[in-house]
Length: 234
Length: 206
Image (spheres, each protein chain N blue to C red):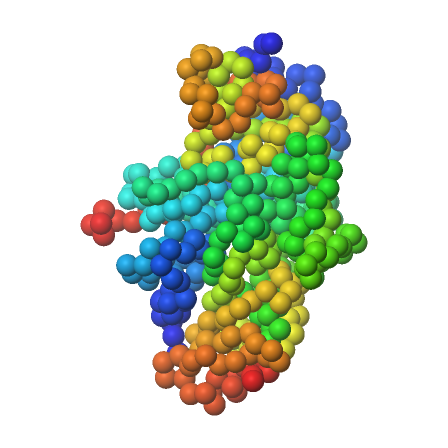
């Protein structure tokens, strides 16, 4: 059971295929699999569909794959802060399946848990509900949403052991666990690979059963909105 | 008329000791400055309960942001979790209230705040989940748009974020509750008369 690979390109070797569905972790630029995204750009894989809350910014995150026109469709809740995304969407070059943020997270979790569909009240009475089955429980309407079964999940974690047990850091956890769960193959990039046995088993956020390949690398970890207060305000 | 900070201060009066609350982007974010001694835990839907203040210069952490992607800090009570868990607590009604901005609100409680067709495409983010799931939805927004037209309407014209979801509306001109048959004026902002408030509002006032 060798899960540790030497580089992002090596970890994605034989995995990437044109037209595949990729689930990606990250929220904004926080906790995104930046090394794997760069490797997908370099591999030139085309017609990709991404299930990802955002598409990064113009020159970082999934944004780099929009610039190279490698993305056919996004399944996302938010496209602000990315001018190229909006341009491609409004010109019809890029398909977009708007999915409420919680519905997207649950669609990933459900797909990874063997649940092909679930009912939610999110989006009832809005355009999101159009064409979807409606059921009523206790006087409240719920709409049918489908689980996401991705061909590949790309994920960023803080630490992994050699068996793929993962620990995330602060709000960089976000969509990474549900994205990891819904991928047929899950490739993870981490800041540190630690020896198996050195993580406290009670404090593992995602067990290694979901993780197939791991790489360690240097992360830029760009900040989207640097917001601070002055020291004297303390 | 109230300014942004006065609107935020008025919205903070809606919060009670012990509440878990989600604050939206913009004026709602300012509400955190006015909770005073009340024991309020702020939820950030990207996976955090117990959101702290902005960091001091030099202490920013790329792994610690709020839903507006701003750098923030943690507190003693802070807990982190993934997005599916985060929206589980939102959809499951564990979050007592959400304070959100809006483009339009209607007298039946309809809310529109996520897109202008053909013009502005940002996305709903977590807003549709929040308005569907939390205990109480409070909208804080300017009473009129930049053309001076009422944003408090009989019917929304923009794509909805939620249908019949708003409980209370706080604008720079006053406070309204969504009730049977329309909106009820709760109070007028400083220096605004009830006549002025009625004249500036398109929605049915009961």
